Image 1 (cartoon, rainbow, N blue to C red):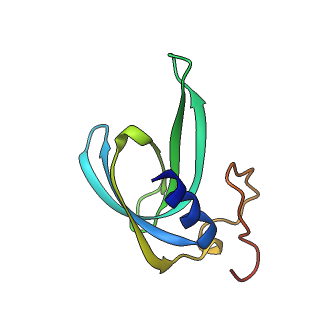
Image 2: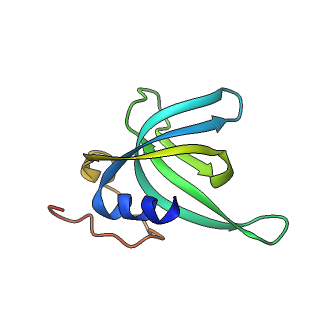
Length: 103
C-alpha cells in the first residue's frame, strides 16, 4: 500500500479510502494523497501516518491524518487531482514530488 500511495502522490492520482474514525465508525472518502509522515511511538518503533486531502467534505478541516492501522482499504484511482486547488503553501514534504507546473 505504501509504495502505491507514494506513486499516487507523484502521479497526482486520487484515492478512495475506507478507514476507522475515532468517534464516527467507518468512513469512506475520496482524497488526494499528500504525504507520509513517520513518527516514533511509545514502543520506539516508527509508525507511518498517511496525510490526505478530503476532496468531498464541505466542512473545515479537509486534511486527514491516518495511522496505517486505521486504514482498512485504499483504492487507487485513475482520476487525477490538481494540487493547486488545495496546496498553495510551501510545505516541507517527506515524499519527493514535482507538483510545479503541468504534471
